[in-house]
Length: 245
Image (tube, rainbow, N blue to C red; front, side, top):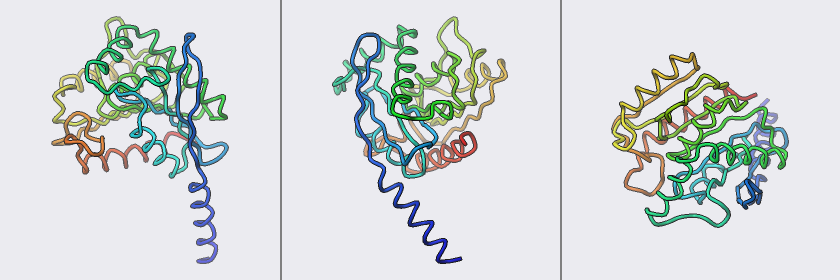
């Protein structure tokens, strides 16, 4: 039995070690975008990963690799455009404000990313969307759109609902992972979202982490909180296991 276990472990490690990510160019609304795709093998459940306000960077690629290591295919979305990776705060605000102000465009870009993932062989019928900060807000937009995904996860994401929208069309279940010390997205926003989801009967779980500020999962910053990061990542992994085949 021990020999069999070792052989199985070697096979698993060989599969994950072989996973290599690649940039994926695709078109949306007549413009060019560049996402990132990684998979441990054919048939792996899909995680659609949506970036923060600085665009698709090494941070999202690292997280995608972490997910591939535990058996998930990942398509990291590009919502800003190929080569657009803002570094100045004013530019970050400009790019996010454009999409916050045009929710139809945000939705079309998210759907284009799903199509790009499908073109790579990803199983979009067995998928969860997740995002960080701005990406979390985008994931909730996708949930409200009625996207046929099994789950939607926001890490320290924007939680407000635009006027005229609600969660009546939401198909999958939601997981909200939030910092109690977040002053950008407050606990009032958290409570409002909980009430909105309850009103529409949407399956949801919402967790807060004491002492965790906005962007508490971002490695190497003064906002990073290791305890909250590890706990939220563990719960995310459990959620994926519970939700995807």
